Length: 318
Ligand SMILES: [Zn+2]
Ligand SMILES: [Zn+2]
Image (cartoon, protein in one colour):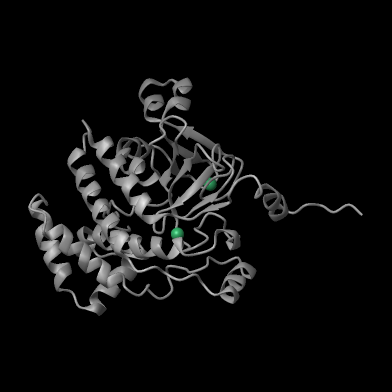
């Protein structure tokens, strides 16, 4: 009897040829990200910010190297997540042990740097003075993207510390037993939104598009024809800075960073193409392509999700 293949079956067949999920290698991740930020900072309009971000990511790298190894989730919990189409360890659950120690070490690392911008000193001092409960409250608000105006400046540091612990936790899991989440546009490990997507080169992942988690840096495959926000295959288009400036659609393909727009959900998210630049890194290239966000701000598309290392005050709801 013939059996009709379900979408999951088709992807299961594909799994032999390329990984569906790529878990982070934290030390390497932060090293490559920091190097990319320094490279992009050369002659960049926001060079100072990119260098500060690189400095923060270098501190993340040092902390990632010292972090105690996290543990894999027990098999029964993995099965439960899979059966329910849920992420393995949603970030909205309890905060990982050790996150506060990581935040305090990160704050101390940045405080010790004489080159840190003076405007940041009071923010660092306040964070260092917070007790455990205040820090946990701040982390939950940052994860829910619900920070008050007075905490916006602290958000980048809080998110940077959370990235270190969540990446360590993701790295300890088993790539082969990742759930198919519903929706498929959230991270299968922590349930967070992707910061951008990346077209990878080299190795088994080469030629495939992955969504890159803004929190734990897990990457999961999604075909390019699908919108990375609503999964529609109807209205995906690309827009680049050069096309917008010169009105030349042919130039779109040659650009490292494009905005992938969707006429179904009216959002955009950037896609970073390693075929155009092998050093492209999703979070760093997203941060450095702020010009593209400014151009997109004049269109009908709104940004699908933010960059954890760039805290922006949300416009007040009217
Ligand atoms: Zn994640
Ligand atoms: Zn969409």
